[in-house]
Length: 463
Ligand code: F0G
Image 1: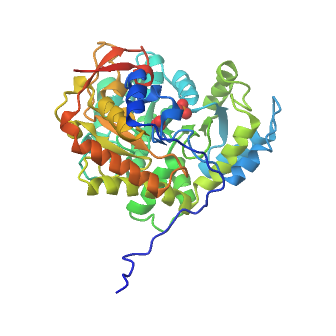
Image 2 (image 1 turned 180 degrees about the vertical axis):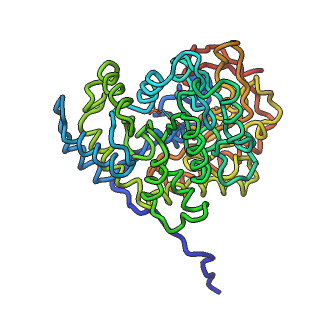
Image 3 (image 1 turned 180 degrees about the horizontal axis):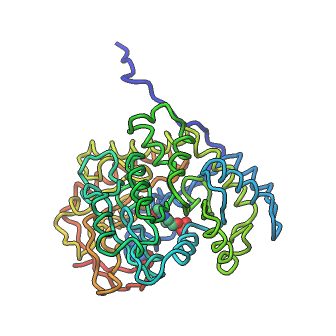
């Protein structure tokens, strides 16, 4: 008898118009490539990668409408019409009146850190992000993690693991005084926690707290649309609201945001700082000409700003964000069905393997996540990223390794790039490595750069 479908599926709200061939090396060739790259997936040549899940940053497929916009780039040095299109969309969708374009997110992080932080200040945030914390430290500040405890526990099922723990915030204010806290640095979904969102309710509480203590509230809004999607799906009272409405409500609580446009906006390059505070804006506008370029292009071509402006219109479409997060969920569920330890709940931009559990025989000093990322590449040519002790770096005061509780490998999905079959290949490869996990040897670090060591550090296999 014919079998009836168990459910009605939904599919991507787009079809493929242009393809880019990829090739698969042999295991032997990949062994060699991994060794030459010092067992660091950042140092592999992209040509040697089969399925690239290193990052969702700048790796997105643009739509035909965005590509068409590229041809309408107004490459004037000053006052490009694409700047004004982008400005009006930032005002409309993020609700921020003032904005400064930058070539990517970290340039905006650099500016906001220098503008707001004085040496000796403390910056509380819901878990660190690598470049964000580094810029805060380079400006003389100390980052303080005030995320809820559950965020540090991979298997803790909590719908909003990105929430700020108000008691931790209160404690910091008591310890150092509100005048030593230039701003609260809130991100969502929290990248290093596994792509975990905060709830609107939590944000409202943080907003009230900040107002009471006269502390500014800023957001890393790089993946704010994913956070808005989780609020719609998980939080009471938001089901019938549109993504655009939720994003605007979220933005209403912040004084300003910095954004890497290489994520939500589905472009290959770009970033910006946007704010409601005219004074901060004026300082940023002064700074941008020193580090990036004139304030109406900030290190970008006119065509890049046009692609961003159009990307904003696409990112808030429900079908688009559902597909994006849905793909991540598909991969995560497949891995769970193979019994592979991952961070729960499944996040917004990536599935995070729990390398501590996966390679439980390796101590953290032997870099389990770094090792696992290299092993997965060797198995199938799938490229992932370490998010553990290497990414955490050294404490600037003591010079010692920071030992994060989370030792993870991130499988990050570029937007609109891979098919379900690519995800099946990925999951099966990880299952194969899981089968032979006990035979995997750890690594030792043989080259360590001073800043953001995960990008360029090199490793050797332990015997
Ligand atoms: N903030 C967050 C939350 C990020 O994920 C990133 C980049 C940045 C800021 C910096 O932006 O790269 O445009 O300078 N994340 C990338 C990643 C690199 O792979 O997660 P950028």
